Image 1 (tube, one colour):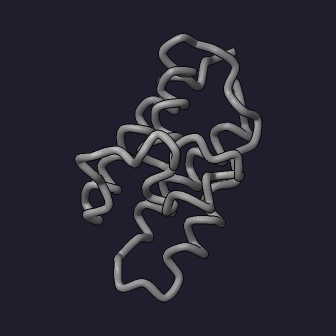
Image 2 (cartoon, one colour):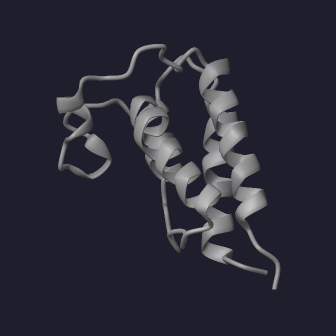
Image 3 (spheres, helix red, strand yellow):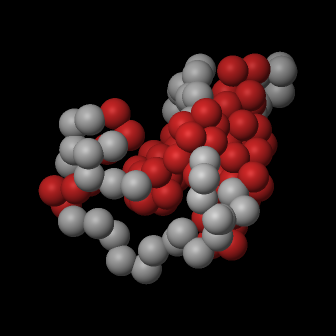
Length: 110
């Protein structure tokens, strides 16, 4: 059985690259209050790119680096498709990375 941690680590780096390419990477984090939202994906306080940068990426990196159990399902790609629908940003690369992460997590070890 082969670990998916290296593949997930690579996909997380590529996801960061897509956020930067789109100009959605922020130098300053949101407030502690915004990050403390109890809503799924912090929908009441953060945009999807902010959530990816300040919540999803750090949590996933921590899981990967510590080789802790990864979620079996993520389902973030459809959210990204909806978020960027009608946007002028060429976000297909970002959506594709999220889809690859979703598929990798669902597949698990192989």
